[in-house]
Length: 172
Image (cartoon, rainbow, N blue to C red; front, side, top):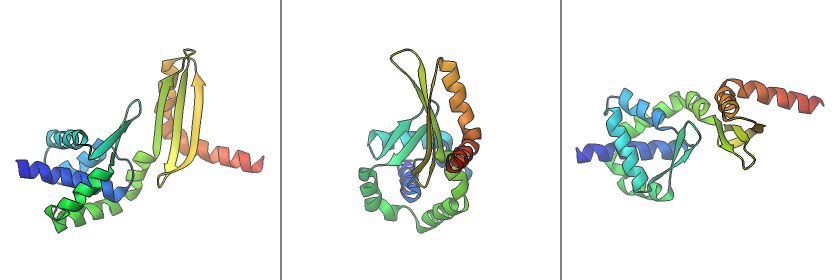
């Protein structure tokens, strides 16, 4: 079992290294479980071990955690690269190519909120492409419920709002 968990960790490190974009546990877990490598419980354990060893890092919004590989994680991957079979590496690479746009779509739209000292809330919403910020919107709202609504609706409205802002600002 110890060897299997090592493979799951290497799959996670390899995937994060290849995509070069923060990913959710769900995206990677779906890949690993859909291929029949293991179950979700083992994937969560592998993520926890990688976090404890500081081979990956986590950033969180109010409802989503995003993971990236650390420099130490890259060094570790280089050391144990050959322990991950050529077939698995090719399969991951092909999965990332085949699902590139779906992965970007699920990670390019982010939203979060925080409470300010005066008691209201700031909802921070962003739209990225290739890890480059395209559009960022920060709105002050009076209640936490309003902030949550803004964050939840951002995924569905971000493209439309971005297009409208560009069109309006370019046409004056």
